[in-house]
Image 1: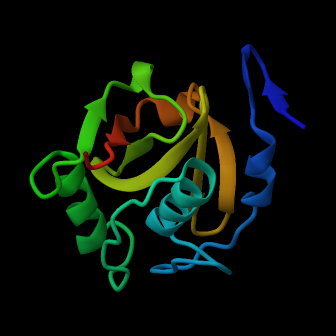
Image 2: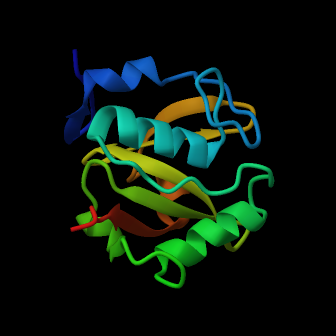
Length: 147
């Protein structure tokens, strides 16, 4: 079963299994996730990608996401390739700005769709072209497998 919304491609059926997963700061699953925990779990389960395990002890928008942002920008990990928002594909990680800071991540589930989780709503699927989200998208990042 695929979910179609407007003029973009349908979201894959596997997304339904992740929708509604509870948000808990620092959680890495399987019963709850923070934003990086959800990205890691889905990337591994659905795309076969073993993303780095960044420290889970710090809250969202804290040191953990600063470390993730630094790694993605190339200062800590060399396996992250920046991808313009217009060129993201399934499995890419989106860095999202909140209150002017890159402090949230989500995973591109399919072209045009972002899977992410936040306090108060849990895991959800949103269109990347949603007006409230467009101005907050910093960049996409693609994890390159070690050669």
